[in-house]
Length: 435
Image 1 (cartoon, helix red, strand yellow):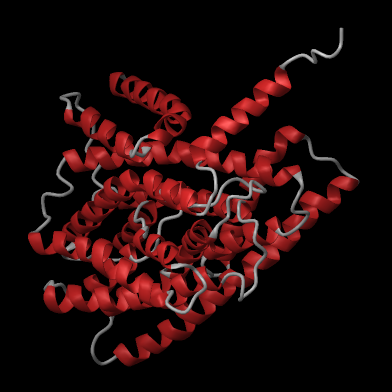
Image 2 (cartoon, rainbow, N blue to C red):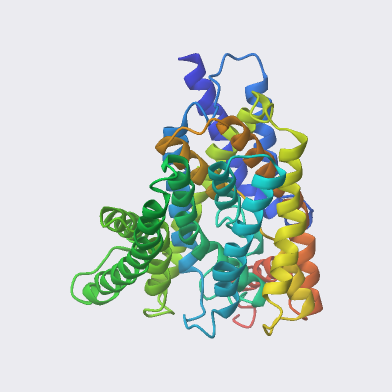
């Protein structure tokens, strides 16, 4: 019971901190995920008798916790994109997902296999796990709230990429499972089944089910209330309904639920774009996402201090740094070579390939589905890469985005916050002209 009460205290303090930290840290090159990882390391490093939060031992719990967090984040990500979907308007994020991510997975898997000495199945799994840009921890470089207007090329490209690639990386996780289980005699047959089922059908079903869910929920949310009104207090529950319905139905149809949730949210966003529902639903999902982030990051810090990174080798660390500092930046610059984004924008987009909670989910999912002999090494490399991304990208996100805003003559996030506070103060003053 004492451990239970201690956990409640830690969570209470952490949740209270997350309400203030994002605003307090906007002026500093530091992000709140860094602090919560440090808090987890501190709490689990003390002799308090807390259980070991090892994701390798608790793969089922890790899978479901990160699954919920990513799903909620994808709903919020889709709801805050103001730009209507078309192949031309969305060409930058589509290039990052359909070209850069696939090339990144292929090159990284070969490097991990041939130079890193990993088994082919483990190399593909690690590549699929680390390739997607995370929708959870990339909030500092994404677009603002619905209708806020902060949707420049960099923020839109990274937001759209983070929303799409968490579903489109899933086929390659299944490919790793196929390579692990298939024998040489049946490999061709298994690869054919993977191509039509895991690559084509599941992806197509994810897009179709998400679009249908978005259309159906748009009718229930915006059209039906003209006859049956929804109470404003229930807006948040509507957002949760969008998340759970789109994800659950798509998974029952053997599609990719992550992809469906994001497509549903984007489809929903296109319906009555100026309606207050969008802001209210986004606010709810954002708060729920922050709550889940707190729990996951504290557990991640605890896992680190309890030995998550002990199996890490120099080769494994080099693979993580190769992905973050070489493969992703260079690949992004080349992929966006013919796009209309400027060179500074292209460099920023290419650098901020943030790794995070989605990587934990994919690895936990694979470990839950099959046994990988080098599972602890895979967790060590993934944990090191995510930790490095949290520190490096978290420290650089604010100054880099502020520099980019000033370069384009836009107010920074801090300046916008100050303008909003000043406007609120002016609106709160009594009218002095009335005597």
